[in-house]
Length: 270
Image 1: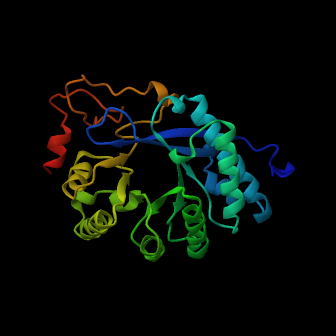
Image 2: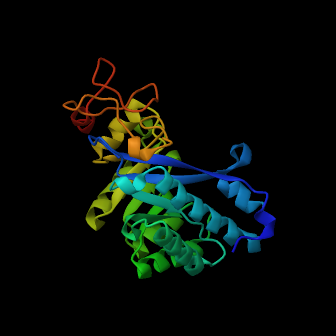
């Protein structure tokens, strides 16, 4: 499946943790692929002819599983979230490749989550076809970059994903936005009714996390709170065992309770 056109293309995968407020370990890790010189996967794929993109997607899947296994994810119960591009109508071959790769590395398929982009610039029908294919195979789905626009709402209404990841643009300065707060509150209410877990991405301030917690949000993916780790199996939150976890305003993971810190209970109090 790997074309010669990709022979010189270097991809790297970073595992980014997703944290539940008050927990000591990530409940999931997202496999984020980048090309050489930090170029995003999306930009790299866009520069390739359409017939080569499925090969790039397959390489990303392979590297994601290999990286997770090498980092010790098998020794935990955490989920592995693997982004898969919907464009090109190649859902079935890519999901088959994901299954084969997971089985080859003895990674439990029930701990896989396929991330499908709900970006408003994307192909709505292609994204829907990918989610439908995941449902047929019993694979959990996360709607990524969810901004409550037509594409995201279409996918949300038509399917029931396991996770919805709020777009960072929706989260940014949510504590000071009178227009976006009702949107997020409505998404949270809808998600609760459907049994869907909402994850906030891109949190950068204490005010943002407090505003989101006031809506009942408890799951976060943000470098400000927990930075990517090279070895998830050895992930440690810098806190005393008897004390609750809290975000550090310095962006260096989670720190001990102190004068500049707040607990999970305090976050929930809004």
